[in-house]
Length: 498
Ligand SMILES: [Zn+2]
Image 1: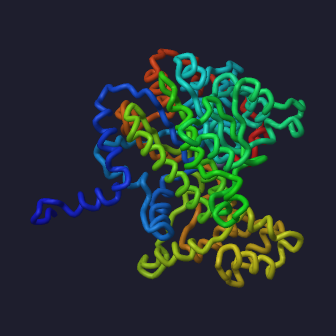
Image 2 (image 1 turned 90 degrees about the horizontal axis):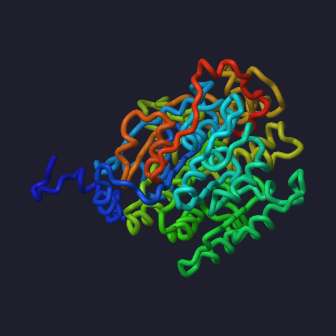
Image 3 (image 1 turned 90 degrees about the vertical axis):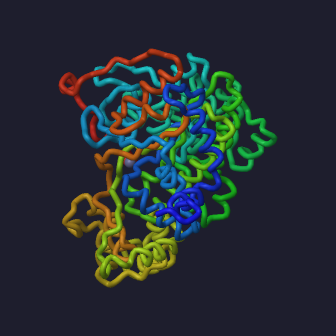
């Protein structure tokens, strides 16, 4: 309905929601005429984000930040392209992150657990190599180890995604900016071959930074190094929830948006443009743990990175932004099980009390980890929740190793049972502790965005990206029927976090 001034309520709300970046979208709209070619591509991945996470994170963001998600607000714009992505791999409707990222990175569906390698051993050429051949610079930014499946899918090839030491060696030839966790795969004292890769990267012209202060320092005055390696933890970066509540982590580890900002500052000097992948990787890990608070805080951190990229695109309108997820995980949702579905906001208030992730909570339990009193104390302190006796008994039994506590076998483990118990207080339930086959959300804006509309097969992203770079390159492919002649990687070869 329109007001007497002709200014509709709906358009007013839309303008208000997008006020911080309204200018950027106007500029992007002008630059994004059909058929336009982007100079820069920023490919953003919320790893393991089920489509149901978007509304949950939007509600939660309103609770804890007083404003909703920018990604959700973008969906109201008619100058933004919307799609759903079919992320199936060569051997399953449900992909792992390496087959998922490989489908984007080489344009080919492969077996879960492999990285840009066909079942017959054919090594595929990743998009980073093509980008470099076409004069573009390449960046990888993540909250996981930089050698983890999603960043690796754009720049490396290996029979197993688990060979992170090998993946760490490969980036030196085709990536310019590398920011995230995983020092252990570069450090001579922890690598099996004792090679000091950090020294090798420095010899190849990379500036190395090891904490947040060094990262921010190196990009002061708009002069970020052209080649930059930043590794801030031995393994994964901490969950945003844990970082928020730990002063030492806040000081040593940058936020995803901060790493994204420095990467853009470095890459923007590339005369022929760049390809940057930004991954909110621990959204997936929190979903594996059925840990709603940790997941939604990491989703908010990803949204802050989207805002950083949009601000960059305001000044650099030849930038295509693709925002998506690689697969669902656990499919959390609010179950309308309170009186007449009226309790949701209470649930988000409970969720907002969380001070640490399930991972940290369970790690803190120590020697009496299965004792009900110790669990109650830890849950009270970490989550601000008082479990009922039945909930406490079930969590305690599961932590003690008992099985059969849930009829859903995919939830029958300590984090699954804890997730069920906490869900009684927050209203959020889960279908499993693992990946799901859902189509993922896909949002694109800027020049070239129209090629990401509607139903999109994952492999199309590679074709779009190399076309935009002016290359006609395509990797060899294999059909599902032909692939049946080859053994699938052993299940134990796929790491716990997939
Ligand atoms: Zn996963």
